[in-house]
Length: 138
Image (cartoon, rainbow, N blue to C red; front, side, top):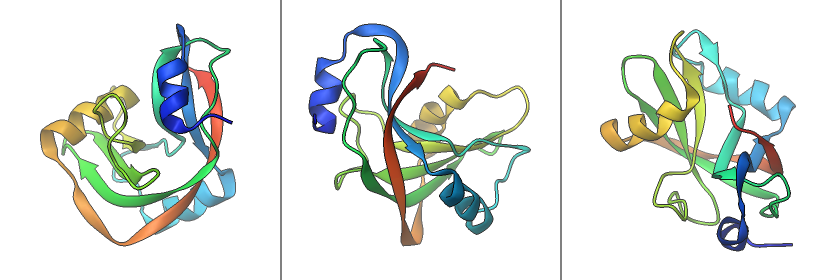
């Protein structure tokens, strides 16, 4: 099994995403604990790297920790997640779960929301099971 960094570095270009999916039952519990601010709850995955081959190696399944929440105030809400002790992805972005979106907004906008508006610490931090996965880019 590859480490997350090795999976990131070795992934060939393509149209898929590698990262981690949230457990469906745990997702429901987390959405109840952190009610979505916007109409479309997403709460689906944490991206390690996008635009990779469908055959890219996967990172290990792990337990992440929700440590923060970001909201741009105009329709994008995300949870900041610590993976292997860091919130920083190998590409310099922030590990996160797109939490909810207003109609017309896209999950990929979470990166800009976090970078532009920062995030507030969630106390106490909340562990979340993350299952290694490859999935199509949305």
